[in-house]
Image (cartoon, rainbow, N blue to C red; front, side, top):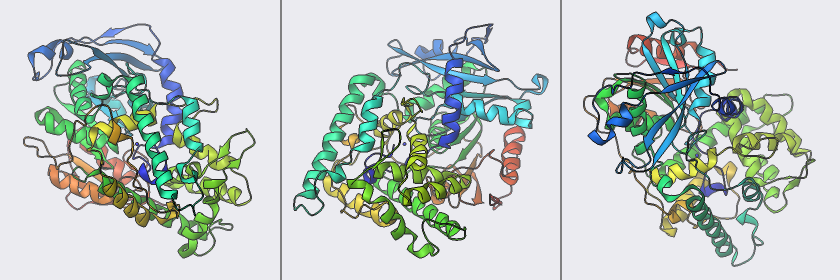
Length: 529
């Protein structure tokens, strides 16, 4: 999940960036609280994969009161092949069931990213569900995966100054576009950045954390959490990248699953290039939908003809490649920031109007509104600090996926990406540069494949037809591989479960509480905002 130098690293699938940004500030200070404690049973629940892990499965969770929530840390091995070695502490947040006498268990949440804070997501969802059947009958639980949020040790790659510079200085502008050696010089600069980025991640995070930060290990952590919470079986809701954690867990621990809701799936068996191209196509479709809506408004900066909107948008943003726009606070709006601020607005239809206003302002030479959208996507606060979401995204994707190490393959992939999403095309030709994963200091730990799971109860997979970040077809493919019940939802936004669409929310609630799945072929629709 960062939107660095454009085509090489497109926008990541993740839960709504605005939700995470708003909740991060609320939850992280809370985790430092230490007041009245409640303690778990300390008895391992369900089978323990190895005797050396029994102490982790049997650990007692000491809960502190953190505002309206409970919070604690879960202890896990940093490296599961060395359970007697270094350990990590995972931040966990809980809102207890409103009706303890009718409690069904814990509902564990992951918001995606990779890099999204599960504690922040759980805090927001818990407040929303407080008086619903889910809030009444489940403890709502979120955890920050290893290296992420308030978990320790922390993933760190770039500091705030380096992140600001990376956003501003594009290799696309390293030489005049008509320079005969332009592509060579641009690609060399891309790869210099990529090598430096990989080296800094290794130095600042530690290779032992990097080597064990992928979905394989997060799924193992989730089984330790299940046991420490006192649950015989896991009830889980995963959004976007959280679906990968969910189906990885299902493969490793199918008999420990009570219920899984996987919303906004990543395609499990596509290689990296195919996955990124499919995502690019999703963003172009979202752009086209936005352009159609915009054309019906009184003032549309993309014009009244949706067929020319891509060309009009490029005329607005391409000058920023060579000449970033000065802002009132002394910063400059770059081409990358303009695209990043545009992409984040496609996650929710409610953000289309702010994007229309921001693009209108850009047309008149003002970039503050678009920069605010980009800052929200990049995780930058008003004080100039950054969340670690994008560092974590880089780390997890580099160990979760086989990297592209062949420049010819990178060139083909980037050409396909530009064709799939022409509104983001710089017009300066595809790059053959390798990204940071090609120079990663540790090997990848997962391979793309269709899950092959036996003994898994039928679970629920959800996909939105116009999801810009996680294509609808990926949900169809994942549901087929897991023999899951599939719920298709007509609309344009990224993920949908428990976000205010009654048809979907009723189905999800009934499944999680009663294990009752909707009839095969059921469809829902998101009402236009």
